Image (cartoon, rainbow, N blue to C red; front, side, top):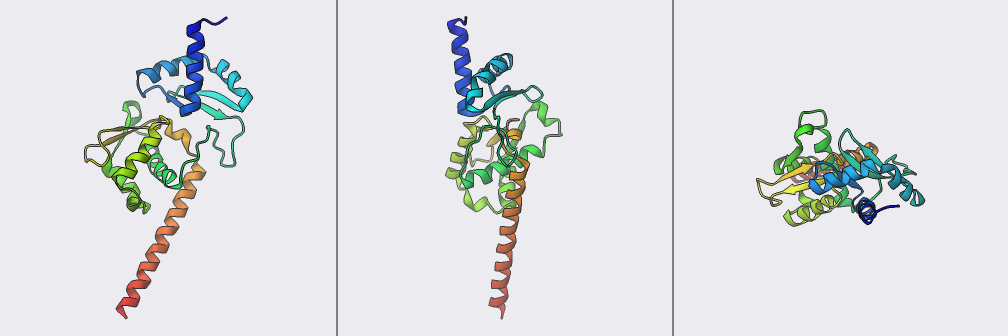
Length: 205
């Protein structure tokens, strides 16, 4: 029999997993405690979620507990899925790339951060800079914060703003999804470039 405290801890952890998908040990003290609880009770939580087709998986190497689908979709991604809007997905791909570029560096042990200049570079690289003003960028980043993927430090749009990138990012996007994003946006940039060239040639004649 469970005590009231044990029952409450179990239900709180289950509800948080449903809400955010990821529990990140390094996020804050509350998340650290919940991560430790989930790690100790992963089997019981998985049994609880089995009826709706989920597993609870803990990756101790990076300190992330997550809710995973027992029946992955065609992309091979097994995490509990959230269907983002197209513009949100594009920004997530840029942030995912920033994180993946640093995975082999010493930054992982200290925490991975990106500043406004680095994010702007990625947005510009894929022709997305014009899609985000300060307000829309802040709103979209807030969505990712709700899933414990990032944490915005400072005010979005200001030069001293930084974004902490959490290891949960490596589970939120399948490589095939990112590949499709790159191919689609590279093609679009190429087509736009061709169109501009044709217009320039026409004007010169």
